[in-house]
Image 1 (cartoon, helix red, strand yellow):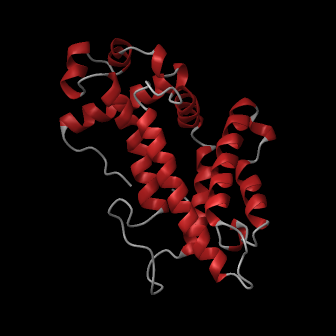
Image 2 (cartoon, one colour; image 1 turned 60 degrees about the horizontal axis):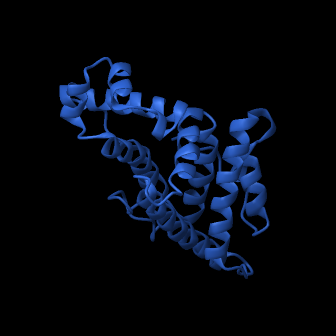
Length: 216
């Protein structure tokens, strides 16, 4: 996970990112100004611009900050983390799947970030949106990484699972995103992590309870 900021400048940037995350989550990217973010962070507009040249680069760093932590946790080696296990010393395929579903549960503890991604991914469907390319790339990477993980698990099953891991990965991502939207509307009615494991059970993949719990 990301290291805690140590220098004064790093701490200031972290405070700006925290404020931007909260305001973007609450109101959406288009409705929030840099001046509002600066005021929320307890600094001047000019002071914010010393750290971020504009709202677009600030948005992209807000998005990237959490994704970098998640990618290193879920897909070791993708962003410089330890490579996936080939000799039993690192996280194997079952552990990486457990982590993936565990993040679904983790998201239920961070409604602000879930709301941010839901709002921005919808806004970013417009090609002119500053985060459009970011979300296109994000889904490309997630589809590829999850398909590779599922392919490994399908091949290891007895008998091997006769399903296209690329199609299942796309379906899994759609399920996770759709569950998050429903959960934002009615949290008590949508057990996100349970529904994901029920989907995966159709492909013979064990529920998280068989492998313990995960924290991130």
